[in-house]
Image 1 (cartoon, rainbow, N blue to C red):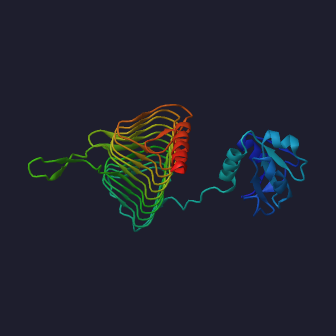
Image 2: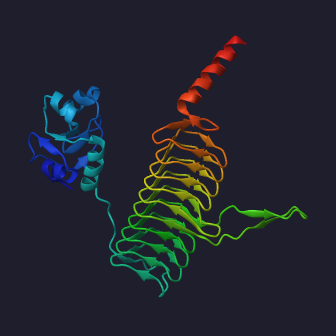
Length: 332
């Protein structure tokens, strides 16, 4: 899909230096760029490579624009990486098939499908399901009774959604995800030693603009709700237990695991393989490094502070302890 550089600049709220009528039809990295493609650069060391590449135009920051002797048109933005991501949405729009229900899908009369909704091959939809306008349900998905999916959502193939789960608008769920399954809750009989299942009758609520990675599992609340806040992004292979409350614009990397009843406030960033014990509370803006471990009932606070290690501690404290251990081992 061809666009002039000026059209893209208007979309990403940038400005053009040079020929604003040059057309681009795709995006690329600096190393593999070809004529007709758009690239971006964030640092001075790669500026020369970008300008010498075969790309037709380059997105740069204001600082780099003043340093460059442009050999090709520049799109100047305060945030080049963000502008590049937005440009990609224009140049590489998601393809969707024609609206409608595939003949192999099972859709009861009680289900309600919004305008231009898409239900693909072998989808199974339960009674009372609501699917919003322009949403796409990929091949092999199963939506149990009373599931609600908002507008402009995209469910990739083989997603399973349990009864009572609600998805907001523009939610994206990748293949293999299981949403609203029972939490891991049991009560031990002190006489027999046997474990009996605690009721798992709550619900799962996922707000607008959430993206959920492949093979993610999110449990419903035991008696109330598990909630994922607006704009949160969840990587592949993450597990979120019952009653967890996750705020807005939280980023969670792969293989992170949440025990039950955890609270995560807005704008938290979690690296890969983080483990959180039950009833932990992570304050707004906290950053948890990869493989950090948060003990049960622990409260971490400090906007913009990075925590590392197990038990998780502020990064400076953690590094000091590592240095002490290193000195002690050398003395031995």
